[in-house]
Length: 513
Image (cartoon, rainbow, N blue to C red; front, side, top):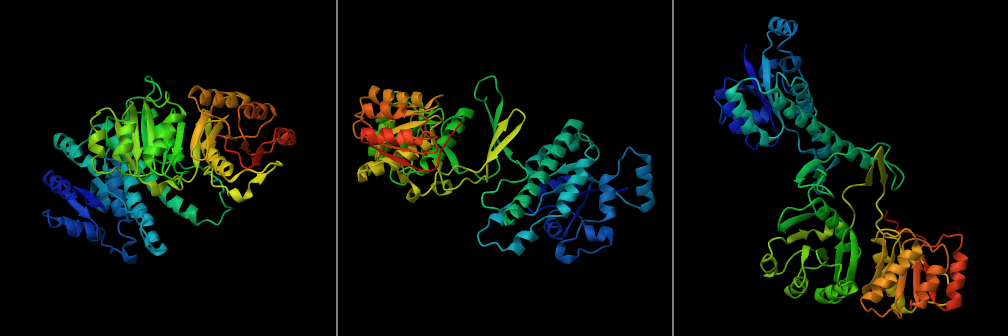
């Protein structure tokens, strides 16, 4: 009885070496049309699947390997006498190696101007079936879906024609993961085609992501951790030691924050919260304003900017220990200057990818399940904001209110942001009461000698009582922006009218628990 190695691949990386070495080990190479033509240049003999089955490839290649001779050769349990007897009676040989990777559905789906027909034609049918059959019979069949496994598998097969059980199980796990991820990508495509209500939540969550990086530990040293992703990264590390779990969390928070600002802006992040935001005509000016918000917190923090980082700004950032610097690009000489500190991470990101998250929904993991929601993109129209007080905002106050509203939306709740039109002055976040958030923001602003007279305040949630307004006005705040929606709104409005300041309701809140 012959032993076959069935090879049918779209990605031909390393496949010629695999085929040649398998042939040396006594396997007959069995293949489909395109792969066979490629392997004939390297192998002494390549048998076409259609020659073995005596059935041609039909329907323009849609049906190639779907035949009992193929699946019996893969699925037969070599330790089951009945199975072996059936193969002998039907003159069916074993297929002991299956090396298959799939039509590039994801790549074609994402290709610009790809037609629906082209996308559909790249839904592989035979490939997943072969992979699943081989993986089911992993104790008898070597299933290969990743070129990275070819060489080690060959080394083991040279030692013994039967792979160690734990390694066979590893290959089977990769195989089933491959078909799972492939089907998820196809399901996502058809989900996009559905006619459903705007921003509808899916009836079933399908989470599929591959391990991108093993991390040293999680939030704390006693926790194991890894970074998983299901898409090409929007950012890349250009320099520095390996990123930690907390680093990646901070990077994600920084990217979510910077996308809200169009003018040259710098944001300093600590523990997933901004500790300073500044904008200006130049990045150096923007960073100086951001740093001035709180001159203590930035130590060991993250700086993100939304313009190519220039040497002047880099020199300012370099004055204190900054763990991570994130920029869409770096001007000539800047990387070389910043790389002098070996432990610093330097990251480049694609600003164009930040407008909308690549993942369709935001998911939070619970002890017993998941929560899913549409992303809060903070993109409501300011035309719908309502001035609810007698006093109208000045033009400068209105610009400051817009800035403060962006700032508060990226803080953890309960959150308060005190700001001017191009910088934050005091940030109060993560508090259990809104008055505590107000008092913290004021305390922080005063600690770093900011003049609050004429500044504005944004609150991520409504004011339940007038106590917050009284404290803000006492400290020089001239205008307030908040969602509105409290049963005590009228009390807050009356307090503002009494004290002679402006209040705007946005109709949107931006809680971040």
